[in-house]
Image (cartoon, rainbow, N blue to C red; front, side, top):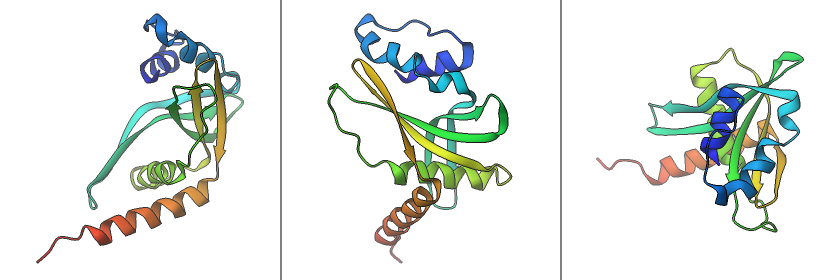
Length: 150
């Protein structure tokens, strides 16, 4: 699904993918979000070198009619149509935090998760400020537990 999304966002075409994934890919690429937003970055890699933390988000979107509005989106796939979403706010907060380290002039107003399931794709909004706070707490707790011994 990730490669199909990246190909779609960078070329406008779905590209080739195994037929058994069409239940996930087709609703993902037909989602209404693509009518309003276009990709600025796909599979963008980030790192906090000071803390040895890295990751990559699936896409940074901007509104087609307002190029100032930016939305960070991550794609999550689930195997069952009735699967429940889970909390990924700290993960998105990490991307937002690391993005601000590298691009402090960017202001990402919104964040969300595209939940891709067989037969449907839904967009879940994530509060940007809460996500960053959750990330900072999780990051600091992890670093506290994993301090090097002297």
